[in-house]
Image 1 (cartoon, rainbow, N blue to C red):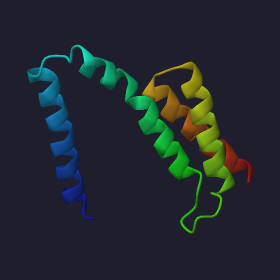
Image 2 (image 1 turned 180 degrees about the vertical axis):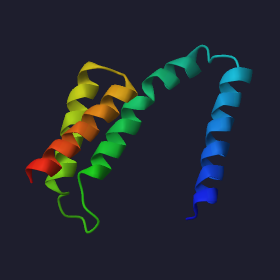
Image 3 (image 1 turned 45 degrees about the horizontal axis):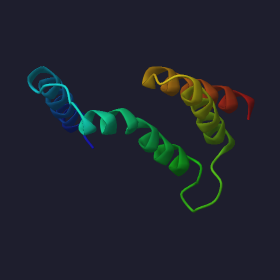
Length: 98
């Protein structure tokens, strides 16, 4: 993938999300409840995929540490930035050790 294509895809993605936040009203009722509950299953599916390698075996120890740290933070806080930071810190720490 070329750099201009990557930048164009990122611009389209970010632009559409900003436009949706600026134009659309916040969700109400049952849709609002769904939107509040949606991040947990999405995170769980990403964490489950991260636990296996490409060939179906267990993932690398650094990846397992990243998932463990991210899950530990996700149980306490709902901030995506904190969860991603914990996962990255766990990955870097485990990469340094192993």
